[in-house]
Length: 251
Image 1 (tube, rainbow, N blue to C red):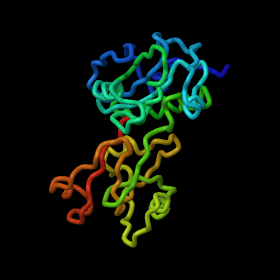
Image 2: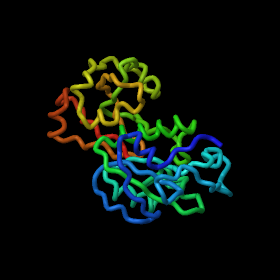
Image 3: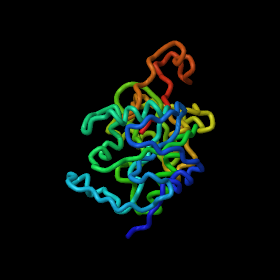
């Protein structure tokens, strides 16, 4: 049997106190940003569960983490709203809560735990990494460690680790390297909303932020801000069609 980890220990990894639980579909009265955990135990101190799912598609069943109470870890800019989106999400649909949707295939009671956290992206990362450290993989419902950036045409702001060049980043996204890449801005001068979600890997502590001629839209996140005089004037290249970045997406 692999090592196990309880709900309490998962939250403790981010220095947070556990709130709840409420049963699946129960209301979470918390309008602050934070993190949440879906578990198959009603006590946050339980770290072992004997439930084993049956009838799952093979590609889904292969991700099942045996004996673990925690099956999904997520984050939200507003916990009440985000969990309501999760409750009403239809498996296979693109929204409103595609992340973690495989937990809806389980035929067992589910319980929701949560904790307010202003730096919810960093808290989620710590919780996920602690779970993987203890069990060897991410929770059943977490297909990826954290949300990815999806780059398309347009203009925007893309944070990069200092060890990665802007040209390489564009190449990895299938985009040609433009001739007019601007100079990097130090991480301490970048907008706080981006720094919340920049260091998604624990090893990336020193980031440079490059302004690139490519719009960044966030997978399963919010649409970018419309171009207005307010956000145009606040960009370092006012009048050139640059927009401000958005906070990291919820999960």
